[in-house]
Image (cartoon, rainbow, N blue to C red; front, side, top):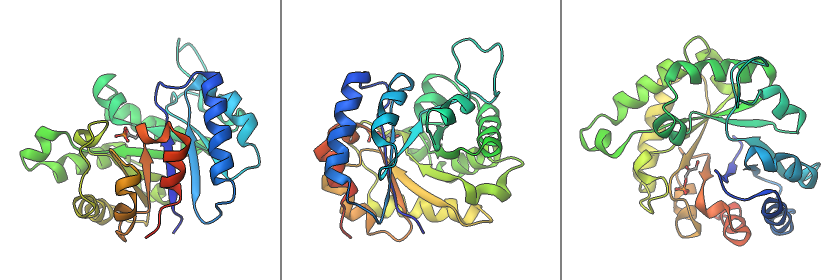
Amino acid sequence: METIIAGNWKMNMDPGESRTLVQELLQAVGAVKDRTIIVFPAFTSLPHVAEIVHNSVIKLGAQNMHWERSGAFTGEVSGLFLKQLGCEYVIIGHSERRHVLKEPDDWLNRKLKTALDIGLISIFCVGETQDERESGRTEEVITRQLDLGLKGIESEVHKMIIAYEPVWAIGTGKTATPDMAAQVHGFIRSQLTKPATILYGGSVKPENIDAIMKEEEIQGVLVGGASLKPDTFARIVKFTK
Ligand code: 13P
């Protein structure tokens, strides 16, 4: 199964900063052949980054999209436009969109369906909050997120990527131990009828990447803060088991 190292830049890096970051990253990882490297810049940086990564080892993705192809949806972005810019991937249901922007599960389901239809590979994020973990509801929450998000498209899950991102580990410096993450990955896998690539996300950094990637259950990582520095992200890309 493919190994994926993805960098979610979130709402950071203006177009000029994005160009510099991806140029330096490309210099550092340009020769890496045995893993898939994906960056997710802000919408406004996508054309700038696309120009630099075109035909290189770095693939391009967007952090969100709308479920309709076009229409009266002020402020939204169509997946078709993203494809035209060179995006092959799209993040759907990141916890910041679920919790801060209150995106409900049925929106995510529609987005996943559209991405499948138009040929964008989704990275579908699931994960529990601190409260949900502490009250022993991790599996219940993840089951609900998977059931509602994948409603009607479960048989196509092998065409998507799932990211397990425990909300309490995102941007907090608290990482799920490799063992904890692997346990939830195993649970997610047991809920799916087809093999899917499952990534871990939440405070991944050079200090913990090797231990995380030693787990058989973990096929890659979705990195936030540590993807904003070329050296740091390159070290993560070049993990050793
Ligand atoms: P951090 O790596 O900054 O914790 O963010 C994780 C994340 O949300 C990736 O999508």
